[in-house]
Length: 137
Image (cartoon, rainbow, N blue to C red):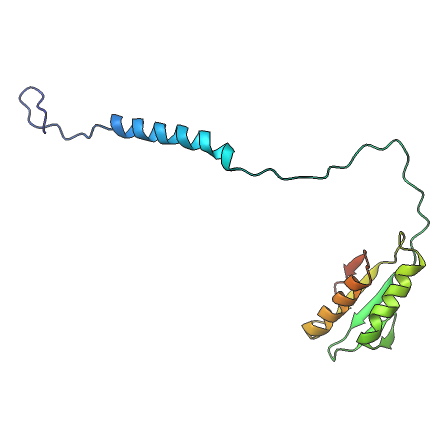
Protein backbone atom coordinates (compact mmCIF):
# COMPACT_ATOMS: atom_id res chain seq x y z
CA UNK A 1 0.00 0.00 0.00
CA UNK A 2 1.71 3.14 -1.14
CA UNK A 3 0.97 6.56 0.19
CA UNK A 4 1.21 9.62 -1.89
CA UNK A 5 2.42 12.98 -0.76
CA UNK A 6 0.90 15.54 -3.00
CA UNK A 7 1.85 14.66 -6.51
CA UNK A 8 5.45 13.56 -6.06
CA UNK A 9 4.84 9.77 -6.15
CA UNK A 10 5.12 6.90 -3.65
CA UNK A 11 6.86 7.36 -0.28
CA UNK A 12 9.98 5.17 -0.08
CA UNK A 13 10.60 5.43 3.70
CA UNK A 14 9.78 2.51 6.01
CA UNK A 15 7.59 3.19 9.00
CA UNK A 16 9.74 2.00 11.97
CA UNK A 17 7.28 2.90 14.72
CA UNK A 18 5.75 -0.62 14.97
CA UNK A 19 9.25 -2.13 15.02
CA UNK A 20 10.32 0.15 17.88
CA UNK A 21 7.13 -0.72 19.78
CA UNK A 22 7.81 -4.45 19.46
CA UNK A 23 11.45 -4.02 20.53
CA UNK A 24 10.43 -2.00 23.61
CA UNK A 25 7.91 -4.66 24.62
CA UNK A 26 10.56 -7.40 24.21
CA UNK A 27 13.05 -5.34 26.22
CA UNK A 28 10.56 -4.97 29.08
CA UNK A 29 9.79 -8.71 29.00
CA UNK A 30 13.50 -9.59 29.21
CA UNK A 31 14.08 -7.06 31.99
CA UNK A 32 11.26 -8.58 34.04
CA UNK A 33 12.19 -12.22 33.47
CA UNK A 34 16.00 -11.88 33.81
CA UNK A 35 16.07 -11.52 37.64
CA UNK A 36 13.88 -14.62 37.96
CA UNK A 37 16.38 -16.71 35.96
CA UNK A 38 19.36 -15.76 38.15
CA UNK A 39 20.57 -18.13 40.86
CA UNK A 40 21.88 -17.02 44.25
CA UNK A 41 25.51 -17.76 45.07
CA UNK A 42 26.50 -18.41 48.67
CA UNK A 43 29.67 -16.58 49.61
CA UNK A 44 31.47 -17.06 52.91
CA UNK A 45 32.69 -13.56 53.72
CA UNK A 46 35.30 -13.06 56.44
CA UNK A 47 33.88 -11.94 59.76
CA UNK A 48 35.28 -9.22 61.94
CA UNK A 49 37.40 -10.53 64.78
CA UNK A 50 38.23 -8.67 67.98
CA UNK A 51 41.09 -11.03 68.81
CA UNK A 52 44.45 -10.17 67.28
CA UNK A 53 45.94 -12.83 65.02
CA UNK A 54 48.37 -15.18 66.74
CA UNK A 55 52.03 -14.34 66.44
CA UNK A 56 53.71 -16.60 63.93
CA UNK A 57 57.29 -17.56 64.46
CA UNK A 58 59.86 -17.07 61.76
CA UNK A 59 59.13 -19.21 58.71
CA UNK A 60 61.28 -22.30 58.31
CA UNK A 61 63.92 -22.48 55.61
CA UNK A 62 62.43 -23.14 52.17
CA UNK A 63 62.69 -26.54 50.57
CA UNK A 64 64.49 -26.30 47.23
CA UNK A 65 63.15 -28.98 44.91
CA UNK A 66 64.89 -29.16 41.53
CA UNK A 67 63.91 -31.32 38.56
CA UNK A 68 66.56 -31.69 35.88
CA UNK A 69 66.15 -32.68 32.23
CA UNK A 70 66.70 -36.38 32.97
CA UNK A 71 63.78 -36.42 35.44
CA UNK A 72 65.92 -36.66 38.58
CA UNK A 73 64.45 -34.82 41.55
CA UNK A 74 66.79 -33.07 44.00
CA UNK A 75 65.59 -32.24 47.53
CA UNK A 76 67.89 -29.45 48.75
CA UNK A 77 70.58 -30.58 46.28
CA UNK A 78 70.42 -34.29 47.21
CA UNK A 79 68.85 -36.75 44.74
CA UNK A 80 65.55 -38.16 45.98
CA UNK A 81 63.30 -40.79 44.38
CA UNK A 82 59.90 -39.43 43.34
CA UNK A 83 58.05 -42.10 45.33
CA UNK A 84 59.64 -40.87 48.59
CA UNK A 85 58.71 -37.22 48.10
CA UNK A 86 55.27 -37.47 49.68
CA UNK A 87 56.66 -39.01 52.89
CA UNK A 88 59.31 -36.28 53.17
CA UNK A 89 56.74 -33.55 52.48
CA UNK A 90 54.32 -35.01 55.02
CA UNK A 91 57.10 -35.07 57.61
CA UNK A 92 57.88 -31.39 56.93
CA UNK A 93 54.22 -30.43 57.22
CA UNK A 94 53.83 -32.45 60.44
CA UNK A 95 56.58 -30.41 62.15
CA UNK A 96 54.35 -27.31 62.25
CA UNK A 97 51.18 -27.42 60.09
CA UNK A 98 50.42 -23.72 60.70
CA UNK A 99 53.92 -22.57 59.70
CA UNK A 100 54.94 -24.69 56.74
CA UNK A 101 58.11 -24.18 54.72
CA UNK A 102 57.90 -22.81 51.21
CA UNK A 103 58.38 -25.48 48.54
CA UNK A 104 60.44 -23.86 45.76
CA UNK A 105 60.11 -25.85 42.54
CA UNK A 106 62.78 -25.35 39.91
CA UNK A 107 61.96 -27.47 36.87
CA UNK A 108 64.26 -27.57 33.88
CA UNK A 109 62.68 -26.53 30.61
CA UNK A 110 63.56 -29.95 29.20
CA UNK A 111 62.10 -31.89 32.16
CA UNK A 112 59.22 -34.25 31.48
CA UNK A 113 55.84 -32.88 32.51
CA UNK A 114 54.91 -36.24 34.06
CA UNK A 115 57.63 -35.89 36.71
CA UNK A 116 56.46 -32.38 37.58
CA UNK A 117 52.88 -33.63 37.79
CA UNK A 118 53.95 -36.39 40.21
CA UNK A 119 55.80 -33.85 42.37
CA UNK A 120 52.78 -31.53 42.48
CA UNK A 121 50.48 -34.45 43.29
CA UNK A 122 52.76 -35.49 46.15
CA UNK A 123 52.73 -31.91 47.47
CA UNK A 124 48.94 -31.77 47.28
CA UNK A 125 48.55 -35.13 49.02
CA UNK A 126 50.98 -34.03 51.74
CA UNK A 127 48.82 -30.89 52.26
CA UNK A 128 51.61 -28.45 51.42
CA UNK A 129 50.13 -24.96 51.33
CA UNK A 130 53.09 -22.87 50.14
CA UNK A 131 54.33 -23.85 46.70
CA UNK A 132 56.31 -21.53 44.46
CA UNK A 133 57.96 -21.90 41.07
CA UNK A 134 61.49 -20.61 40.62
CA UNK A 135 62.28 -19.05 37.28
CA UNK A 136 65.53 -20.21 35.74
CA UNK A 137 68.00 -17.44 34.96
